[in-house]
Length: 204
Ligand SMILES: [Zn+2]
Image (cartoon, rainbow, N blue to C red):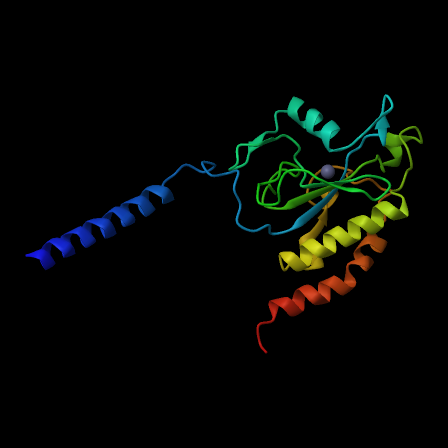
């Protein structure tokens, strides 16, 4: 009798578990949309702004306000609200600032919320900048910091350079601008790419 009761309780727990799983699988798309298990790629942007506006540097706080006006918001499990759509922002002197945490979905490239977004502060699109919005190409310190950060994230998430995109390759935009040194940037990723492949290889 005791065994029977134990078994029926076990059965009930099992059934409840299955029911919970079924329910979870029926949740509408987007119910858990702010969470993501593993980024599938990295997308590079520019902010399309000058390095400073009205004497104030364009930094994470500035972009957070800008993206708040555009209605981007995500709340972390700890209850912190993030508006900034990028996961990282890199200033022209090479300073790397944190945007939304890596485990939260991005709001930077339409249809690619499952990628990490890195933005360089500046406007590197010649037709738009016209020499009035700072340098027409990212300074070497900024490109160096971008290559280092991208390489680190590639190794961390086992991505290859095929998973690293410029925004303009994924949508109808000039971002990160025609002044962005595409070839030099990808060349700087060559070594970590081999590392990423090696870490994917599980044979001893
Ligand atoms: Zn972009």
